[in-house]
Length: 620
Ligand code: ADP
Image (cartoon, rainbow, N blue to C red; front, side, top):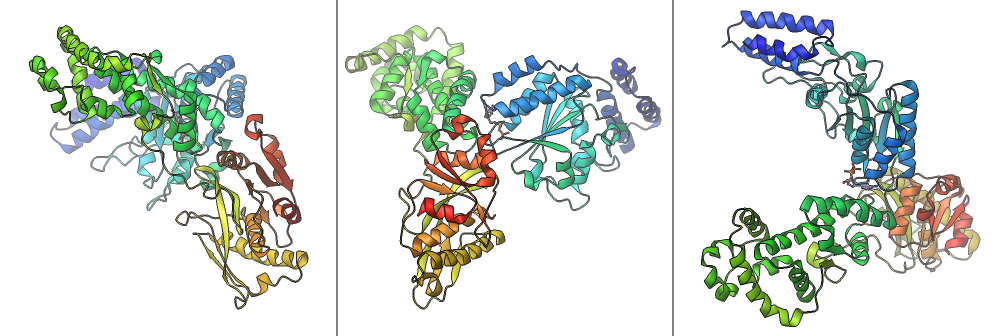
């Protein structure tokens, strides 16, 4: 009976199933019939057959190379990202010409929450492929990719075979997440297993240890995501086409929030658009005071939180037949959170329902445990006890009239504005990004590029000992070797420059300095803070603060030449976030800067320099 079941399952695919697989299946079926049903080998064979027959052999979804449709889909799902979308459309157009989208592997790189995964999903939708995602972050066991040998107890095939079973087609789009965080294997190297998977030369005959018959993965489209491209093993990186997504400026986040995040949050909570209004000012406050990251994931969470609160409030409304207005009024007037509305004087816990008539008098005495609890109960009830409504509403109107007098100027919907924003999402989190309004002597703002996107950081230099200091330099702030060396270079160079500008100033010769880069707990490295360090030291030596709202980045050589840096877009976005007005970049980065969208560059005063003397003139 079992064999018949397997045969039946295979039937629709039998034609397309490769002969070598059919042969193995037949052999295993014969074997199954000879085995004792209670033996362990029977089990192994049965499981094996189960996998072999369930895979979508030769079953493809029709790929769609319609570029116009793809553009519509990409625009539908994502705001902005013009260059990214363009690259993807190019990719699809090339696929159309060649008749296949194989060959190049797209790698989307950028900080968390900028939409890498959701772009992957959109590409799948545009191409009419099934979507499957798995993360290789921290993966150290090759068996996760290649499967276990069948002889192991509890053996399983690898991720790719599981994927094929899951999607039911042999040409899905597979998103491999966090490829830059691939672990180091103790037995076997996951990177080379992945390489085997991704390499078009090899993956037409991919051999999973469990399956033990080669499977054809050459029709699978792989897309990878990474935070930092530098951490991707080189052989893998060689095969990829990297598309970088830098992050969003406030203006872009506003659009994303309005046109995308709010809509999904509304749908998820079942709140109608006309029931809630989050004002522009509230949204701006949310972006600037709560969600200062490069991506929008945190923003999404906060917006969802707002809608959840509104939603739980309106569930309460449903039950009580209150108008949303009441809740809105209460929110506006009392400036109180939903918890207090619901657990406060108006609501009665559900068990009191039978004794509704007493409840009206007893209102104040009753407490509800939590919003979640009460709203769940309310929900389940509102679907069952529709007959209760009239009684309830009568009850509600009673309470309402109590309030009515003072709140008669009606507000139509729940209004979320800066004054009550904190009721929905709590107090703003403290951000240390801009710790000085006007930087004091010895402090200069630099720009850094991290896995989380761009950020601003301060370089601080103070004086430890004057006179007897013998020109020493002490460095703190979890700096890596490269950054420590660049502090040394900066020290040497600052001394030379001071000698030239103020020949009589013996500051560097006899003073011990301490250079620190907050935040002290975050490890930092790289040469791009070179020019910032020199400026910080010179500012201290000459007792002159640098120009207000200025940030700079650039590697410096011992002779004062300024070398290019990475992450121009990320750094520019970070500078804007910290309200920087003037930025100094290396000349060699001018091209990168000119490529940025006009709205990212807007309102910034940017200088490109190739020698430190120019920075000196601009900053001090
Ligand atoms: P990542 O994979 O880069 O960490 P996600 O793809 O998970 O980020 O994105 C987080 C959320 O932000 C998703 O819900 C996504 O739809 C949304 N999002 C990101 N960028 C955009 C954008 N440009 N337009 C609309 N929504 C976006």
